[in-house]
Amino acid sequence: MKNVPLSMMLLLFSQAASAGDGRQETVLAERVIEAPAERVWEAMVLDYGEISNFSPFVYASDYVKGSLRGELHAERKCAFNESGSRWTHEQIQEIDNENMVMKNVVLDVGKFPLNTDRSFAYYRVRDNGDGTSTASYEFTYRTQPGWMTGMMRSAFQKNLDGTLIGLEHYVETGEIVNATTGNWEAVAQRYE
Image 1 (cartoon, rainbow, N blue to C red):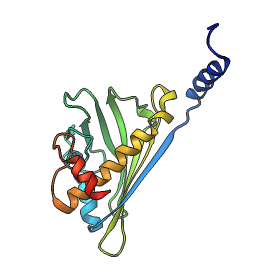
Image 2: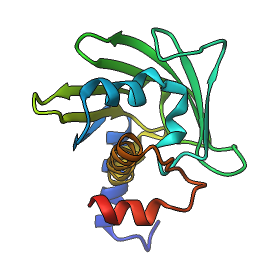
Image 3: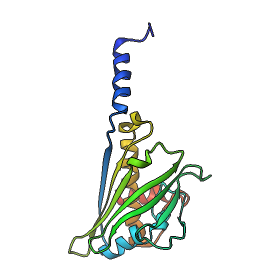
Image 4: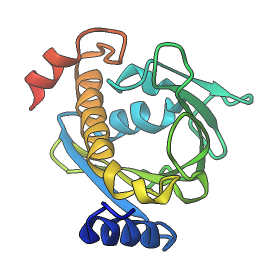
């Protein structure tokens, strides 16, 4: 400790102190999609267990615990690596089909630094009145350990933005985009 500069010790102390402050971060992604809101809602929420149809970061996804459709209390598991050891187990906690708003909660994780008691997302689709719709993800999270919360912001933003690009492509073309299809770079270039 004798050779550690005072500024470094103060930085470490402030990070350790803020780790226990309970702070959460929120990231938001929105995208206008050239498709009716009902079609976007169907792919994004009602086909809840099929997020691997359009997320370039998901290797596989499926319904669990008897869930068959995106409805209240439906559950899914998403694998974020080829072996399936890095995963999330999620559940629809609230859903309003009329206003196209859904709250998704993280129940459990495997090799993810998320505090499951403090991590959830709102999925929304808005009809723009001109044949297009706006899809959005609003993800509020806390990491475990807490000091990583701010550091994960850009990674989560990239994930949400990419997933909405994948959703747009899937809705418009029917072509699947996920971590195994090998088409993500071409899709991303087309839509950015």
